[in-house]
Length: 197
Image (cartoon, rainbow, N blue to C red; front, top):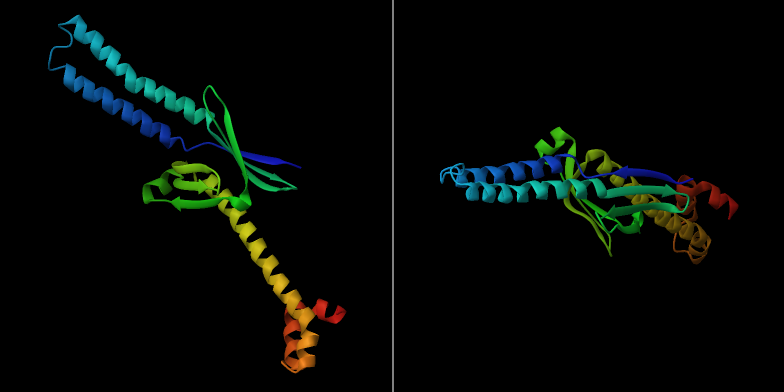
């Protein structure tokens, strides 16, 4: 069974872009109003044309935000992170969650709006570099990646214990360790395997 969770960047990034558009339009107003924008129709046209740039930039950023998606896929084969983006040309990258590293920055104001600024990178791809995302997206990434790290450490620890259990009779036979100590340790940590060996 394949489950997918789709996330987008935080909506506050659109608010930041809107505030940038308003700022640059205000700067244009401060430049054109003192020179008499309404008295000369050429200045009025220049103001209108120049005002379109911040507004168009805001519109393009909305389209980018809408088309950029981060998908966490959980299947029997394992977990994967997929990024899809592009307005006219759709692009996509995908990596196993084992290869993904997540770094987070979360100042106070971001915690208040439920966002954090993260970097998500793998050895071959950069998924997110310093973008605002919902905290739920980071928490799910962190839960999956930390679960994978724990599974790998438990697996490697289990292999060490198994090797110790297999080698215990040889170590006791060689007189390198006391059988009572080995038996107590193995019974405590991995008792069933010692009894079956």
